[in-house]
Image (cartoon, rainbow, N blue to C red; front, side, top):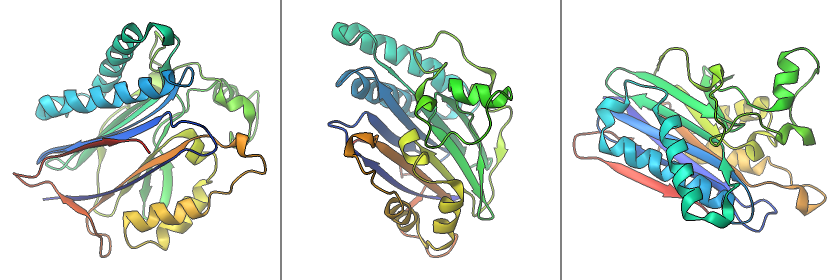
Length: 268
């Protein structure tokens, strides 16, 4: 039986409220991990991200075996949850959110994922970072088309998105093409744009090499995030780390046995 170990963080940055929301749900067959980064006003973004993650986890927990067969279902569920949240909060009709969802089957040893917006999903295999998701930002589209060169990090215009949960269309890159065979020692990271913008992949890799547990890895990465000269420049930043197998001597092992069903969702 494959073992999963989980650690997380979510920070305000310099904002007055946290519009990121993260959570996971796991049973003996599969784990569902979700992260959302809301937008649309002081309360609207926070409500959007909370509603989306909570509903994805609720739907997964109701039928985990069926959910493991389809990588795209979290997007449909997320859009339904956002539509309901908008109806319940008429003053926040423009609320929106990104979403990133990872599904890991402990029976088949496979993982699938889907994502809308600029929250990211990474796989670290043999210590090297591989970005599984694709940013749905206007700037990334211009880079893909060859009109702009360089990295997204540090660019103010990277925040303009052409796809999110509230968008009518689903880009082809929103859902993985095929399941990924999960190996012992693989590490997954879901993170909001405030997190990855502050940490290049090389730094993530460096801190992973020096960490014995997922909690230590997350703490080490947080210590490398530099505060800007002007506090108003720092976004919320959140991350959810999932280690597969006993890489070294890990703590907080989530053994997905017959009686172990865990569900948690949180915001700082």
